[in-house]
Length: 153
Image (cartoon, rainbow, N blue to C red):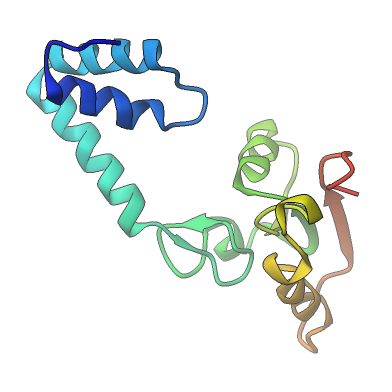
């Protein structure tokens, strides 16, 4: 694909690195941003930079958070005796969007995949065991909400 500007080409290349974004979509996004108000592109750039550098992981459940403890773990109205174990943050978001689950989570950070070289030591399995066996633990129920794939099993 030939571009009239090296800057547009660079933007397209970088946008196309995102999952699910091909070169045509990346070009469409780049041209949209070029025509957008300056505030729009500045706000987007600022939001992306803040997201990348300011988001941390909850020390308890390993979900993404703006502080050391996420809002779910900090919420005393949640049922802390029930832990839903999920592969990644997308699962937390999906379950939360149902509005039905009132317990807390534990994010493993992926699934075991020998083909990709991911083993239990690469995931948050040890912290789950420590969390459930700690003397002060109030956990009574663990729900495994892992994809029913070979890796999930």
